[in-house]
Image 1 (cartoon, rainbow, N blue to C red):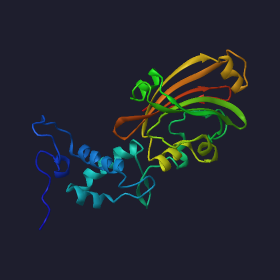
Image 2 (cartoon, rainbow, N blue to C red):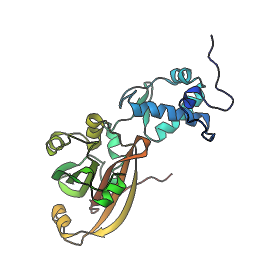
Image 3 (cartoon, rainbow, N blue to C red):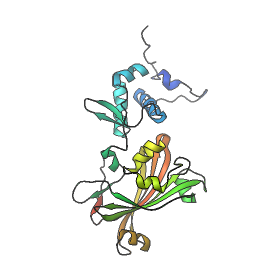
Length: 261
């Protein structure tokens, strides 16, 4: 027996499942509903980072919609870096282990040459209670456990970034200084593969500051040298904040690069 087409209100059966009784009806384009369903499968781990997802034809059959509707949904997911299309191979779940993904959140680029990962020097790694401002940004209760990381990133042997990173203690239970030291890939790759947490978007604030004595010593510069300060909150699926990162960037040989569309 042939499959029934989507209903005229553009509500595929899967999108309606589990809807709250008496909820106000809301309309969203059909491709947006399919995008939400695919995202839910990504979030649940049905397709893991780096894995091939089903073809557009298979997804169209699964959701009982046209292939064009699926393509439009995947176009948006690709634009948001949740999936990546590879010519002749199909569509894959994005992963932070890909080289190009390593510079998605780090916008500090060298004035000359091509960008490359820095070398981390970990200054401090400890478990502590969340300060009030950190708890607020990570949607935690004040005093909840967090993991605090302080590191210096060196590029071509030059200390260039001082970072303070806060992570929810429950999400990253078991993360230690020893594990960070021995892991040679990108930090977000470690979070993805060992803690099942993938950063999919971030918000960032940037301002100019003068280097305080302690940070100046770590960067081997004079106190009050101008630095670029960033505060970034990274989110995983469901807009859940899972990292607060405050960085100080030395821009003598680097610049902050962004593409505005």
